[in-house]
Amino acid sequence: MSETIEKGLTLALESPDPVVRNLAIRREEIQREMGKLDGFLGAYAELSAGRPLELPKPKPQPVAPRAQADFGEEAVGIIMGYGRPMSFNDFRSAYAAIHGAEPEQNVRKRLKRRDDIIRMVEGRGLWPVSQPVPGGDNGAPASTSH
Image 1 (tube, rainbow, N blue to C red):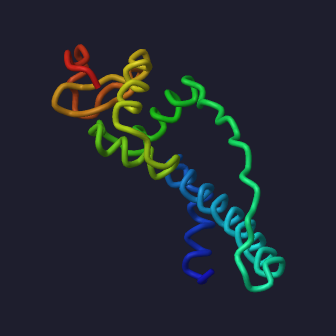
Image 2: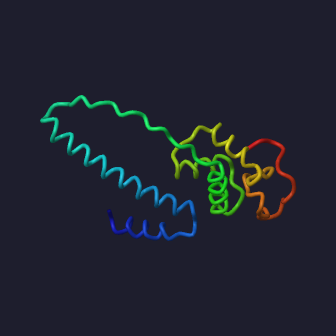
Image 3: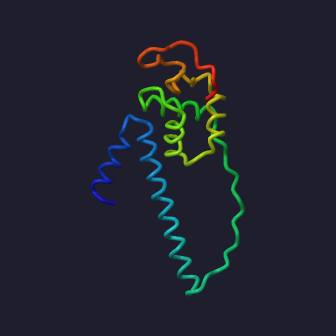
């Protein structure tokens, strides 16, 4: 790893911004996963003796759904880290940078389910219900869905 990236990673892990901190944590997770993949590929090369091996198919592992409360709290952190109301597309991109891409409808449903925490401010974007909107417009939420 270059010295610049190493310094950036250290700073990102100490960042007060949860989005930046989560990206740095995810990078470390990916590095650990790459180490495991490299180990597998090295063992595969040794065992195969120069020819492809037929490996047994692993059983699918059930994926635990993310808790809705965690999504709401994380969404608030992402939006507050942005510092102003955030368009849906910007929010979805920031969320995908942390967790990987998720279908648009899923993100919209999750936001709608957490309308007790996050609202759509007309003409501005997503913003936490508990926070005053920067620059005013603290009225009722937009009538359109997220």
